[in-house]
Length: 171
Image (tube, rainbow, N blue to C red; front, side):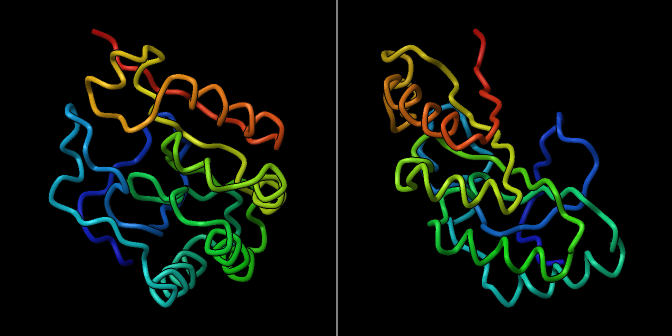
């Protein structure tokens, strides 16, 4: 498997194989986070993804759930995510659910129609680190988006039928 650094698994995610499709965080500027500070954001090469899918298929051929990794793999554009979904189904035909982390601004460049296509291919849940709904706090921690963006982008997910978890920081 091509894991390029520390693997952070969503603690609320049921046990499932992990497939790294990006490295690092596309934003990597939040004041409170150092999880990926030493990792440059990059998409994983398609060759790595295909090799890793073949390996997952050899150990878990009947798996129906897959967690796509790194900090925010949903930052990939629709075309790339669509191609990855097709590869997943080629190697793991029983896949029903794919989950991944996302930032609010990862949704912006995808239309509701594109989101529906991704949902139909199995991307059913996003784990979104919103951190706060307060505009001042979002600016202070350098999240890179506004509270109104959270509402607008989550509305697109609602229209597409993609479920999501919003993570908020307390304190």
